Length: 482
Image (cartoon, rainbow, N blue to C red; front, side, top):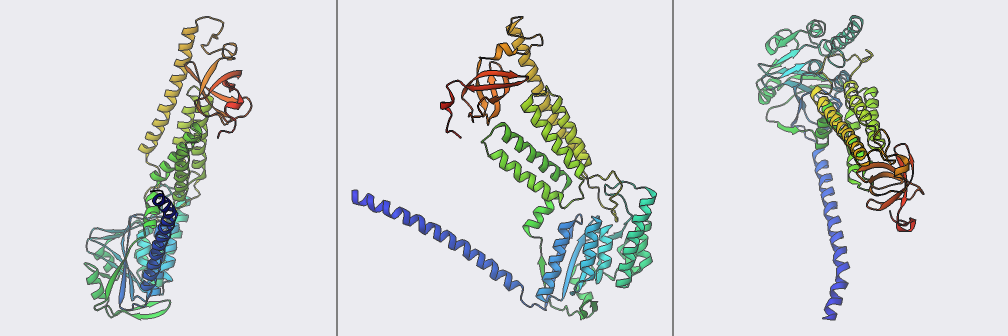
């Protein structure tokens, strides 16, 4: 039996090593498989058409997706890249970048406004016009690219003229480059003109109307398209259509690049850090808070945000922390809630009139109900803390009466607190929270020691609402603890 136990123990490290080696080998094989698959996808495929779907708001994420699609089409030697488009508009900076990508693409690109009922509104008008081939399905529409402010509001006449002229010049340049009706396209900017698919075809804004992608390929077969790389005669009979999809990380960034989600991430991240300060050593809330803040700032990087809004959100967090540690009787908590709401209002606003973003795009702002909800939560917490503090003082006042140990305002007097003992409820590092009788106090250790929660301490001094305490059992009771 002894020999058997010895053999089992000797095998244990070996089993662990083989488990680690096997696991590492598995992940290496997965990595090699991904590399092989990627390389296989880059091979020459002259009989292939790539199809990419672009929907919702045009943003920096969409710029990267379209750039990747054009690069892939060029690397694989695809005959054509089809971009299925359905968008109400987007950011002007992103729109200009996509226009540059399409105008400079060496591979023929067809923008296909589809399916039926889709739109190429605002930014979509520019993108459709910039394609080598512009196509629409029956029942779709294009146009309405009148400039508005970055928040979707009306802008002053001078700034409107400047924005409109810039957008009109851009769309006219695109029309001249692609041989389209510059006057009709310019009207989408100057008078918010919109066209149905049949009207757009009649006005020479688009090249053709097709029911679906197979019909589009039939209509384009044999057509000659001129790109910066020269003339391309499309031979699309029997070609394979391969779908290009947004990668998971692109979808994730696109999802969080929503004003409401960005605001909530910043708020939740800040709350996580506050909880970590309240419960030092918990680690979880702090880590989650840092992750949420990182994701929040990643989202802001894809949105036209205002630093003033970020400053007010940070101020709200500071005030909330002070309410907890200083016990501001609710005033600091109310200030935190107000600052948070103001920060949310300013986060995506442009009140200086400096960010004019033609073409128009859906309003980029935090939903008012989200602001009300988050602000209401903070106000409720602040009211609860204020209530607890006031009731604690009143209970103590009723218990002490007019004794020497109570002040006229119901607060414990310094004379009554010094020498009393309490329990650490939030670790002192060297500052934390101590429960003393039926009250909680912000406290600091007299000798700078780390005093974990649960230890009994004695009050040695009082400064306002801050107690200076020492370990009742002596410093040796906590020395060496973390």
